[in-house]
Image 1 (cartoon, helix red, strand yellow):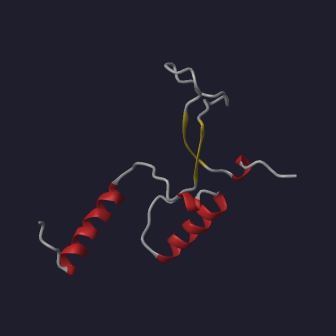
Image 2 (cartoon, one colour; image 1 turned 60 degrees about the horizontal axis):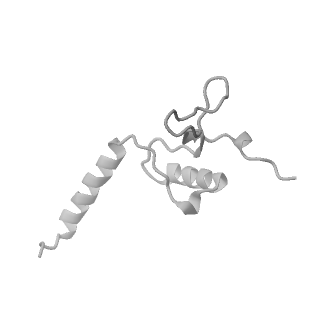
Length: 96
């Protein structure tokens, strides 16, 4: 049975884990709760005001395109490649 951590040891472990995450470069989805762009933008604004954060961007997972706007096709599967791109308001279709 592993030893229980003291509060100080736990705080140090959390600090080390947070530092490791902040050094990383991998894109992570915040949460399904914040999957709509307006919610993600509200969260990012609040996070910037209240704490230490870096590289907060609203991104969308969609078809990747080349410089001419044509979809990039996966050579193996022949399907369009999907990836993260910076979200722009014009990406959301307007509802009549």
